[in-house]
Image (cartoon, rainbow, N blue to C red; front, side, top):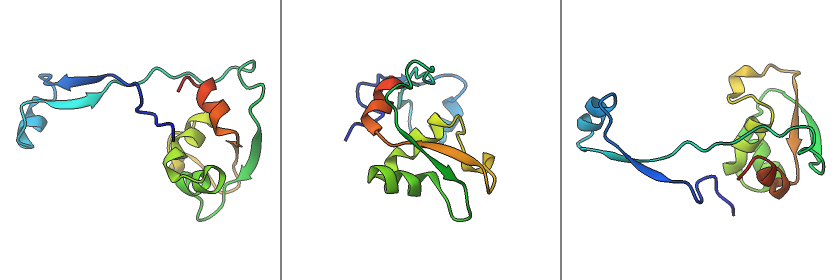
Length: 112
């Protein structure tokens, strides 16, 4: 299973801004993944990405949709990222989102 963490650089965070929170947890520094540089696919990159429409309804969650379409709820972030809607609370009942169904193609298109 491809992970969004594969190949990501790990850094030690001992920044002044975060120091008090790090110390409260009993550490001098913490390891963190560097934020990845991803991009939203342009029209040309979307060629070959099959999508299905999904009308948002009561009980829907990204992780449930990821489980249904990808067999793994850990890919919830792909649906959120593809729809430029990072959290579910930004959706209303009746909103239509697109589910990219060929996971390998969308991961490649966004640079993962």
